Amino acid sequence: MTLRPSVTEHDHAAGRPDAPLTLVEYGDYQCPHCAAADPVVHALQKAFGAELRFVFRNFPLTEAHPAAEPAAELAESAAVQGKFREAHDAILAWSRENGLASTRNRSKKTSAPTVISDASGATSTAE
Picture (cartoon, rainbow, N blue to C red):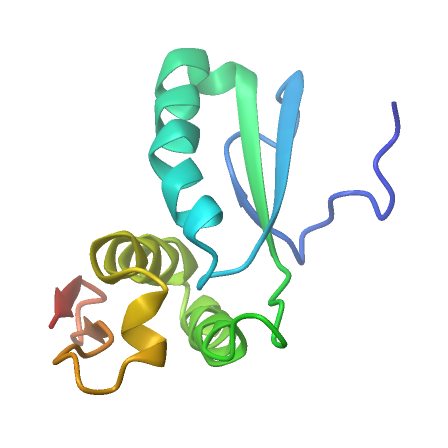
């Protein structure tokens, strides 16, 4: 089977470019199913090791998830700094913890994660 469009250097990929298996996820950061799938993807990466390349492509469903596009933009901004994976993991962890309802119910006290990068390039997440 041939993926179209094929994976390029512009994609957010983890793993060897020549890995025999490639898993491509079209994801929405506000989708509860995408957030729930993230630990499964990590488990697959661990189980398959160098045999698997994982590619994430932003696919925000803005009509259903109004916060998905700003979250995708945050991840893309982090990618410019070489920090896509850190932002991606932080956003999905926050999404799993707070769920879809947190963006619809403004009375619930939540805030999105802030991915902080210092001069050395180390990152951390602040709530």
